[in-house]
Length: 272
Ligand SMILES: Nc1ncnc2c1ncn2[C@@H]1O[C@H](COP(=O)(O)OP(=O)(O)OP(=O)(O)O)[C@@H](O)[C@H]1O
Ligand SMILES: [Mg+2]
Image (cartoon, rainbow, N blue to C red):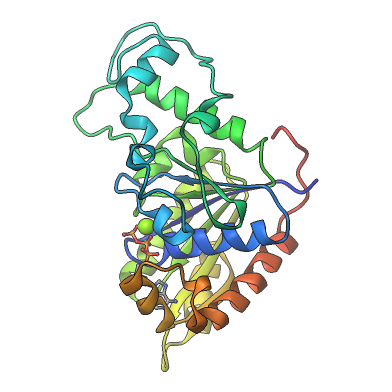
């Protein structure tokens, strides 16, 4: 069976969450088991996935902030340093405990991001997150992680579990610069597949020029989305773009992107 684990990355505001959610639902519509992980410290993936969260606000508390739970599972308080803690905490019930059901059968888990600023060791929480991601990648046909903006997450263990990095890049030097940094760090981590996806392309932008820059950094550009006003409607109304009548073009492009991703990734044995 085809198993895919993707980490969606890029500079702030480039469209990571929109594309992660769109891919999750597109794959789910083809009958695949899809798990989405929100790894952003300000989680908002559930909006784009159309999850039943508003009635159950507790489910959007990031797992990483559940101090008692982390302590229970690892035997050490969050932020503990130099302590002995369990390196193999139990994780196989976490999705059932904290997962949320979203449209098309996608399951969402809000993990959050571990803040390491300040020098404290967050090893127990980190270990739990890493074990969880690696466990879940064996539970789904597609595991898609919506990462925090920028490069910091590449220093954490969770990104390493990704089979491929999707780096979302919008026309503009800053976004390209971040992409090049992510590519370098991703390669250093040993991630084999680093794909560029151009987003918000407007008249006059030159995708070939961007792709060329990325190619020089070893990043294969696999897709380009145009700037689509339907995304603004989605933002304004809180309705996921592919549920909007205006969203047909986006929907078709996401189907195409899903196929391109499958084509680019070799089959992976379960239990990766
Ligand atoms: N192809 C597109 N055309 C027009 N607007 C878009 C497109 N893709 C994303 N957007 C808009 O860009 C904004 C940021 O999108 P999104 O939240 O998905 O980005 P992000 O990278 O996850 O941001 P953050 O770094 O804050 O997590 C949103 O307003 C979204 O509607
Ligand atoms: Mg986001």
